[in-house]
Length: 500
Image (cartoon, rainbow, N blue to C red; front, side, top):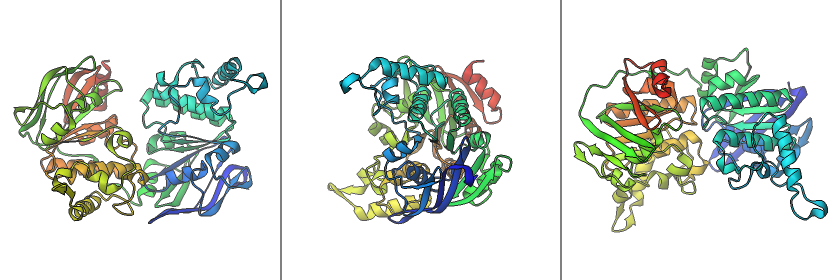
């Protein structure tokens, strides 16, 4: 494929203080080809994407575009060449229209260059959207669009700049199954038009389904490449983690019946939650499943004091708890891992130590002064116990991979003094690789075995089925049913979630 490659990387290396992010990586992608890029968190995928899109410059190696050696020193230069990236966290301006976002920086001017030619802008937008079969009104503000439609606007923006290479970075992380199907159709349509696609995802099934070829990174090196016919799920996993995963990690025995730790009775929150009642027992993993909009995240936020209830009550160990703030929830022995780790769970500008210590200040301070030695000891223990890959405890948490960021939040609660009795996990493995997912599953089970109670919210149905002792299913703000581990199947859960 190298001879017909639109984009080719040879011997690319990149180092940061204390970390060799990429070491002599070579790959290529051809016209109309979909190249899958896989690897564990921290394998170097994000660094490689940022190198191609002009955010980083390689320390060594050469990038070739359409056979010519190029230096991509900025995102502007990448766009000039015809390289666009659709990131997991979309980079659109919410208060501008669809048309303005698509042609940002290239808005057509009126005669004489005075002002924007709105008629031409909307006409060009309609033509572009029709060409790629996207049904959107050019004047519609982006803030009114779903995540899936915003993603389509990103794709249209890439094509409006005559993109020859489009990189998709974890594009289905925040999409429903139906929205993902639309995305896959668009990706194939782009490839059919001759656009070279680099598709990055932790969801190996979709990578196998979409890709013509797959390249795997591990510890900053390209460790394997295979065609669609050569690739298999187990083969990719083995390349990614350097070993075969123990399939026994994904099964567990049901927890014995124990004391009720948390009891919710007729909990309501306006029109979002309607009379939710359930019990969480000591040493139990209680799974909570529901489709987008079912109220699962709203319930987690309500329990942790991030939203006010309009009715009902919560009891902790038999006593009514008036939880109106996260501070109160923490005092009641609760910890929380939010759905959006970067915006809600971490302070990205702070280092690993400060992020891990956020819930532990009362223990780590004396007379208003931080006990830095004790903080260092506790943080180092958290890094070791959760195998967090970081150059050091003073590394800025924004520079860690998604899986390691997730582990920092978990370590925050597991190193807290005293340790919480109840842990609420909202999408604990979203955006993490198969190796990190297995580690987090193992950790959840270990915590339950030690007597901690876990409420695990997940849109990953196999995860819910394999890790949970019991499963609650929500639909349209109500509890649609409760299923024991013994009776739980995908069909039963989905039937309850959809009401069909």
